Image 1 (cartoon, one colour):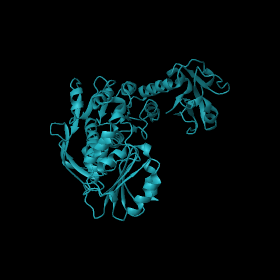
Image 2 (tube, helix red, strand yellow):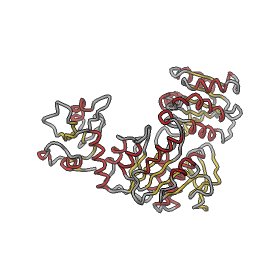
Image 3 (cartoon, helix red, strand yellow):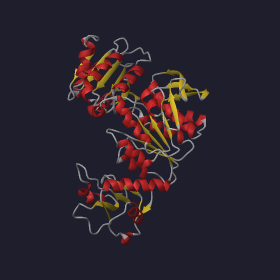
Image 4 (tube, helix red, strand yellow):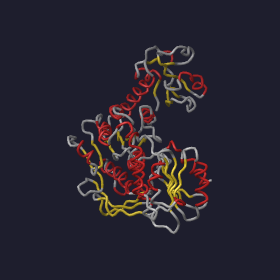
Length: 456
């Protein structure tokens, strides 16, 4: 980006005169004083740590100007400041201004599971014929979405935005912020059920993504999910994906190996698609990208190539070779019951000579339903398919108790959250070349530390 400081001031309705700084250009925006580049506008956000306390650090690291919330004292007198009522709201207003200025097509993506992978797939497909900017990592909230917008290059033609949600009203705000041309929901699961209580209420909150849709905007959703089908009846423009033949885009002839999945799609029946990941659930994610690619008239050979070579955000489901030449299926970024069941089912599809071992950590934010939802994982764990199970975290103790009558004691292990080193010692002693190990947990369990130990 590149804007003059006076243009930024106008965009956010600055409350002070900055005409003396009219020659200053802003080339980036940052809210972390440690991650600035020369030419940056610093945005001191007010949270547990007040960004206003780090203004000198921002200056030292290359900031050329800063927002300043008017209720804060001791504003710099020898450094360009833009006085605003609220620095977060100013960041959001600036992003809206810049979005209107660049005027790309906007694709917004949410879902209880798979939204980051889907975002990566959609961006990969569209990038074959357009200049695309996508959400970095999982910058998907009221701060991250504006930062994604402001990170756009001026030649951006399509902006692919991931949108997260942990409370009602959040997606409504984000949708109105970006006013998408296409809004997509990957699926409805149990993520954040602690805050919503039921899947119905989760679906209501997810549907907020269509509230800011442009008048001719299109809603893309899983046609196999009744909670979405019933809630989209009155939307004029929509496309469905899934596995049922009455979906607009449906997959069939799905087959997988331990490293990839192949499938066909009704719209392109003479093309075999491949994705470098396992599981039917990832086929659904790919169908979102195929559907949106079709809406933007991406050539089928480009869709095929983009899905095969998609660049995925780190810590998503990926195969990694361990130090004992075992293969580790790592999915340590987040977890919910639907996601665990899907990845376990995918993990067990490929038959191997070695043993299959599952390491599962607590699924967080499940609230009052946490006990039964953890226990429900027992339905996908079979000693014939997964020979050993390692569980970690207080709520996984309920699954451990449930599995105690199914697994022999020498193949079922439980550890408290602070016993990750003990888990590693036990697991490492059991692993041999040719085994496969699944790691799946919410990020708060920090199984990435176990992954580091197993691979180094």
